[in-house]
Length: 334
Image 1 (spheres, rainbow, N blue to C red):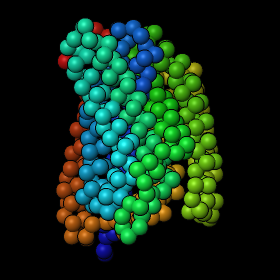
Image 2 (spheres, helix red, strand yellow; image 1 turned 90 degrees about the vertical axis):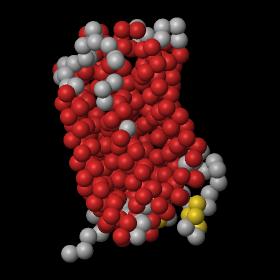
Image 3 (tube, rainbow, N blue to C red; image 1 turned 45 degrees about the vertical axis):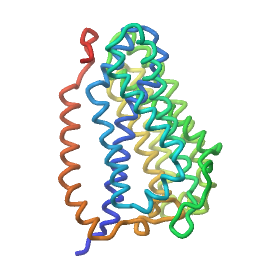
Image 4 (cartoon, rainbow, N blue to C red; image 1 turned 180 degrees about the vertical axis):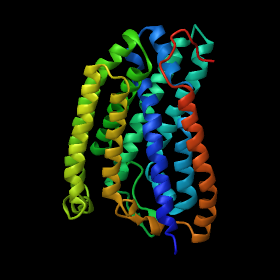
């Protein structure tokens, strides 16, 4: 039986991107919420809650980006020129944020500068990711297997709104993470923030659910044509179910339920994007088979991924297991 290697690799990269979004999303969200917690003790706890796992979370970004370059080189060569500005902004934000983890604990006089770097880097990275997503959903023009747009095609009201929506969504993940990982006044304030973030995130999802189908005729066909129209009715119901679980968990004092339900919102949103895109990797321009590397390359790389991906999953799961439970306010970051 012949395997569709391009499809298998598309699934692997889609999984890597989803893993990055839901894992790095909450620690970016902690940074986004940083300015709302002015007390140093609260900020220390917030950073400590993500310090053991934040850099491991970004492994999935490397896997997704590197995999795209290796197995879908045409898509990589098309998407990058179209999205240079937001992607560079994202990388700069991640750099400043990563450096802030180390430098903030090494200085007293300049601590406020690294607070700004942590919060600003997290917000810029989240916003840039949303802008890039919005620009990709709008579609990237390709002529003769080459990007045919301009330098500023990514800058549209839709992409800006998508950037803001992702900041809200990450803030929800960050708030529910803090509810799960901290105690006392910090957790209670995070619980209050999570209420507003949950409502704002679901409202944003509703707006984009109404906006997105009209960007491309393909999306209208996918969202309202049979059999994919079934998902257009089921997914909103599941979104409302996740919202109910978030709000009821926050009201009843459950710590883990709001975070897990918030992750469910992202999985559902990601599934909706996948239904709209497939089989395109660059919407309406390149399918996964158009952009794929030769079969021999796909097979060779798949052998490596079959070893690497389980290892990444194992050490990621182990890290979260070791650092499970609430953060100890007396412990520092080393």
